[in-house]
Image (cartoon, rainbow, N blue to C red):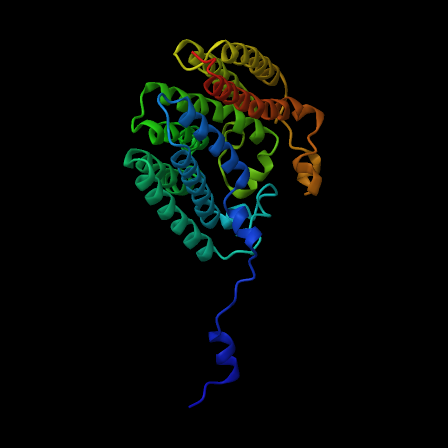
Length: 326
């Protein structure tokens, strides 16, 4: 018996309309660029020398692994991303890439990056990369993000691994100096992320994500940002006295650290996050980056935190490449 036309339509496979650009966006290129930068710093600052081709392939593997984690994260969070203005344009959330396609893309890239890194350098680096992907896509995305306001604190470890992976790729070891670079990024993440959350708390509340301002309020969040900053700044200066950084790093870390601390104190004394932006409440598109005066201390700390982290790792790179380091 011949199937009806309706049955043929229902069973006909649906073709994907995704474009190459959509799959590139799955990789979270902005996050990937920071991963590449910090991983390259770890690789170059590590003692000894590495064949340039081996180093290039290692950085490529770390970049692809970071992109794979981003693709898996978007696949798992498509419905949540669709509820937030900051993320609803992402490929899965917007419906341009199907969840299963994004998941398969992430798994394939994960396997490729880990295996190639292991064969190109060593299996310690490959194991750390695999752990980072699983940690971010599984532990953070599935278990932490929706269950605790400490999500970004614990989950921030995923973003702190790249310099350790780079160091391990270069030497086959991960000594305490590599973990000091890890600690810098780990302690930097909460002030950086909570500053953003202070002026976009409405988005997180709408999506049911218990970020610190949503779960504990703006005042508590501002205090915790200040407390984390008091710990973070001395740790950021520490490489200058640990055989990693020289005079350039010392000047950059101290000057930038004082600026970071000043902005954190300013934010603590402000009322950032106390009241939702009226534009946000009515869903105006420009509200995401059109921050009102009250929330500008949070926006300023968020922006400065990115510059400070880049300056720290840039100073290490400059000194290592020029021979001016410790």
